[in-house]
Image (tube, rainbow, N blue to C red; front, side):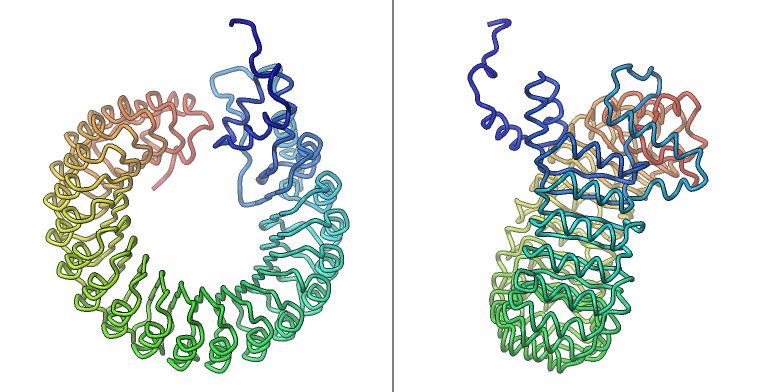
Length: 606
């Protein structure tokens, strides 16, 4: 009945807060907070996570947020993110503007007049003190590239936030004293990221392991020149329950990784980019870390197949393997993994020039649970190898091929016939792949939703007609496939109504007919890339703008048929537009004023 409150009178606070937590977006939660004062209070109490960008005087912003949202458990601060200011183009600022927006605007204007404006956009130790004082229940804190904070601020966090479980300090120049305080006070810490923390030495890491070594489960270290094997020896001695380790360092030797392998027997995830580590360390991982499930090796130049043989023998639970720029690995190493790790589900081989057909064929024969395969710059892998994957890996859902010059239609046809659960197929610059293989995909892979065929210049309209008839795509990228024209895109428009992303850049034969078909059939389209399409004009663009009301991004540089009038049509007709990429001279002053701050990169000189 009109005027009767059927919710507040019947539902307790706890139930309304639980409903708020299940809302799918921040926008919906914020809308609910405007219903009444009670809902505003409850929505603030139900907020567990806040994210802060590089706003002016972020310490003041954090202080305000701490007073509003007292139950926050997770705080993410990333100084690479820009502040989001209220839109004021074409309208007067409301007198009842929210204090949060007013604070942002005030601080922004205030800092613009100061000589030290850059520092005013950075979180300082006073900001960390505000976090520590305001969020006593904090469990997860992420400080990405907060370059102005020091050990003093980190000590304040450690002393006040003793329930902290996850701490991300990537790019922060904090010292040993701050890390030691974390080890002493945050005895529940499980996840720690120290990537690009250049101010740290072994002293800080060692002291950290003394305090929270028993709880630490994940550790990341990269580009920390003063952290050596001494730190890893402490990790091996005190962090018995460590499950994930990510190392990117030219200063780590065998000694440190040996200590981790022997001391951290529960290790499940290991990512290494350490040019001075050799077979000895990787063999120890194979011997002692039998629980290992993920192994990623990047740019290794000093170890051979001996390492993968040890991994294959000892790590029977391996599910995810990445080999990138490992020049001395050959088919023998991959054969050992295939024989010893039958549970493998994800495999990436990138730039390992000595791995060829025989190694991949062994994967196809032994690892029938494989669900994702990525082959990048693998010149020795041919149709026979990929055909074996098609025969043996019927659960394959994602296939990525980049610059594999020996792979052609025969291999793609085998994948299509054998891997009917395929959902994602990305092929780039594989010039032997043509219509035959993609037609087979359309005929057999009915679950395919994501297709990318960048610069596969033998693929034409016939292939896309098959895809349109057999699949319901959500993502399509045919950039550089110059044989594709209106007929192929029309088939996609008619057969794939759920399409949300489309890249047709550099298609010289594509015109307004295809745009009209897309506007009729693909009403869910949110992102489109039209750059370098010489036949598309303002007429085709107007079809899209009028019918595709969900459009958020539109790239259209170097399209001579699109003028300032077409750009204005997109700006005025697409209410959800967020980014338009176009030459600066095609944007009129009126369009600039109308666009306001909603659109990013509106005027780009190219």
